[in-house]
Length: 278
Image (tube, rainbow, N blue to C red; front, side, top):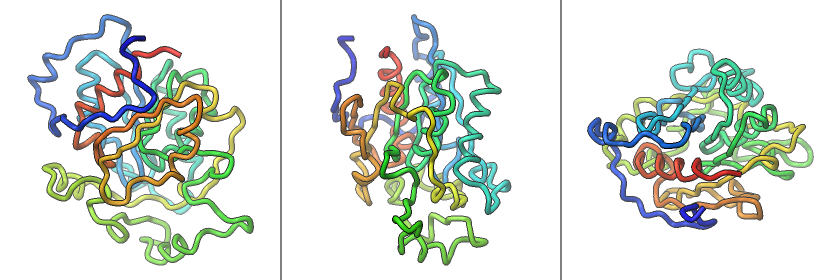
């Protein structure tokens, strides 16, 4: 398509953080059949993080699901030591199953790239396009958020960090990072983020992903790199194979929580990706 996104595109950040009702009302309904989006939050977040992006996509006539994974957000009360990667994969599988979603553009943020890959592997026929939003792309050498060494040992930094997990297994963002890890502290929505962030079950980071159907290899795929992040930009270890052949690679000049700070830009980018076939 002539308006398809190039493999490497730097998109300037020029979108407002809030979604005005008047702006949503002016969005045109799609001429083609509506798209189906499954937007999955990252660590410490919940489905709430996609609120403004989802509002724009729905106003444009598209179907959007924004589930909250077990132990996070409004489901934090379900957190248990045994909530792991398979739990989060099944959360997503059941959303697809019971909401009867097909031809899905699935978008995963941050460490949820691992769980999203598990969903793709289990239900490849339901997936149209996989979008890794500054997310871990699992590979042969990395199939967990926190990989173990050859002897099965976790890295020292994670073992040390685990000493102050709440109840021994709940990761607390604020013990290890400032708000800058997500978005600028002076941003109008920074206080909302501080208020809604929850703990996160640690086992989802340390469990290793098992694949039977090739994961992301058998679907169209895009990596969105948030190059506007100024505090600890996502490393190349997370990007992994996404710089290789078969991938569309997009750079957005937004922070890690760009879906909050620049919802219009993120929604428009997802719609452009959705307009492509194959």
